Image (tube, rainbow, N blue to C red; front, side, top):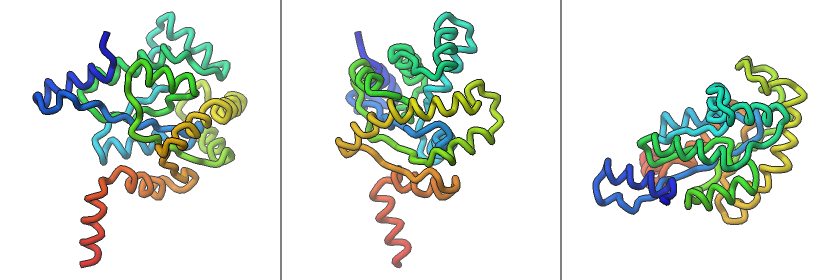
Length: 219
């Protein structure tokens, strides 16, 4: 049975011809605590760099709204501040990647732990190009979450603090794993949105474009 990487590569081949037959999708994992601004910055990256944004949280919430048995199980786990089983989230991500028609993906809020990470790489045969890590003080994240009005069931103080705890215990080891491989791009996410995006742009802008820009400024 083929992997999601094979399926996406096959889609690229159909769209671009045989020259892209062996092209694997580009995946960037986007990690950061709840309220670190990942969603806002992902929207900016989509507009500027042509990526498809896949939010693990949004996919899970859509599944909850569908009223399926899976959705009920997911809802109960989120209420308790627990992490949803890897196979559930990976299946949702696979479906979204294969149906997107794109070959560049921002996977936001996943992997949430080491087991997620290992399962994603084993199932999809894809390693991320890099990990975009939004580093933000806990007090600032709490302020943002309590101030937003998205009607989210998990935006209350008790659940927010549970989510912080889960992130520190489970997700930071994933960041450390990829950091040891030289794949983490760390962003100071406590700054204003515009300043944060300037830092993000410098990571996504190809090196040759940066050189051209420097030359234009010089001359």
